[in-house]
Image (cartoon, rainbow over all chains, first blue to last red):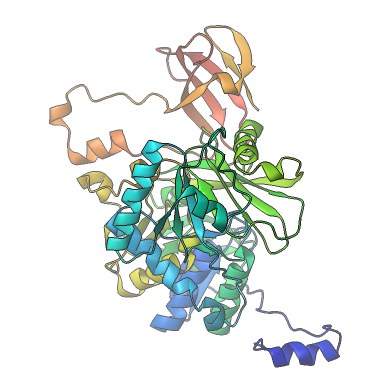
Length: 417
Length: 90
């Protein structure tokens, strides 16, 4: 593997950047592995990397039905934050935020993590009270979050309309300065390259079609479109298709899959310095380094695997964006797309063991999985290596839907999440 | 936007007139106190979430206001049929 550096960049410039080698090999499946990860998104590739890096399990395959990072990893709005209400969630998401720091250096791959701040707007008295409660809860958990007056919010994000007679008046905002964005494709590529360098096989165009279990019920391997692959440890990190994969092992999961849409505008000069979210009117936006405004819309109301959503959902979001940021009213949108998000009843993920021995799961991230990518990968690797959950992901078990110990971020965050 | 046939109004109307009400044919336990934790979990939280043919409830909220059931393919989003509440599963 070529180590990326200013020197290697300069040296390749002399040859016109024509002889860069491939960043990792396109592996073909072997008959057996020590561990298999189903799903080659950021979470799955991250898990493979940490299995190899931290736990010395390098005979690992990542099976991806399409191309790596082509699912929700390449379809999200790249927002990173950890200002969640409940203790369990704050610990889980802040674990990821801590890993985002220094990830470019660790992977020797520029993931373009930008701590530009995530600002959540309050439009009414309920929002003010709810966000201030979040701020207090976050601070008790060591997560930075602070209250801004409308004037301070405007100073932090100049395009914001804080006129008192605005359609969605701004009464204040909560700002997490450590929040921000990262380049989502780079995250998948960086993990894939680093994992492959440690011996992990990244296998694309390899859909899992069945999970084979032995007489004792334990996992023996997976059937794929490229043949049977044996492994006594299988981690499923398949986002919107998680419940379909789990049913292959005979498990019914508390998940429903919905389309979630995002869109980008034509590229413009830098005008938007941070991430702004409005949960009440359901709109959130940032500006990419290419100059496009990156806008997140809501989920459709019905279960679907279509990877596209309805136009009225996008219209609703754009109407709110035009009211909150009037300077963008004449912008044209370039592209819209949808990803399929797997949503749990309490809007918190399921990350841990399953009733099937040797089968582990990382799913249910719903509309907010990208921010957790390094943390989810790290914790899935820990759980698979030790056959027990880390104390951070222990509360996010499957049993909580039976014993009632829900982590009810659904009530705390309501929508954008 | 998808068009949905309301079996009560007998008309195809745009989706924004309707509200999806989740998976169809889930009935509340008749004797709640005899239910085990597993049965409660299945009733409250476990959903079919199929990739393909799906039974679901819709409400024609901004029309007749009534609930009905539908069969829809979750990959193409195409409706196979809609039928009145109380009619047998199709």
